[in-house]
Image (cartoon, rainbow, N blue to C red; front, side, top):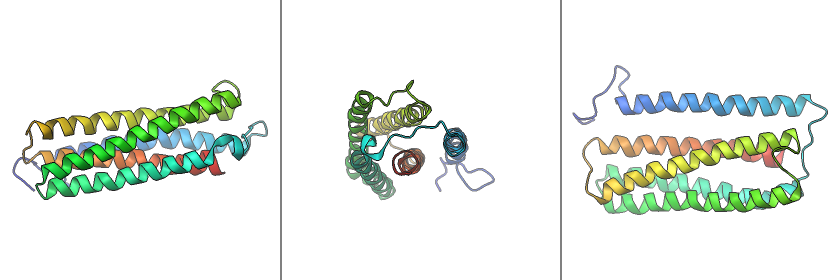
Length: 192
């Protein structure tokens, strides 16, 4: 660990400790919403779940693959900065941001299709949960893309110091959480 990345009593840098604390709050946010969905779905006789044919499982499966692939490119970006290769870091960051953009485009198409199928936020309890959970997740994807874009911009301007490694790693932790949330939402909303 570099002198610039001062560690806490845990052995983690302040940035990583703060990131883990923030991620814990995000887990509580999504955990509460997912728990409410599961409880209401399993306990209510009035909880209408659309048939799988209306849900667009193939597109959601593609989106899952896209996000998992973007996690791989994020790992490669972290490995690149650890090796001191800023050019590779930038390439992998662009791939990760691109994965997020593809995810959002597919999601926008899917929203439009579902809306025309009658799955709206006000049509049913399922619709309310579906748009709340996936919409909140989309905002997190957009935030992650913005964060990665900022890191890309810094790398392009040559603003990388010893502390930059932590910045990339913390951004990677956030991106992996966003992907993990989708990996949980996909089966809960689309397959069960």
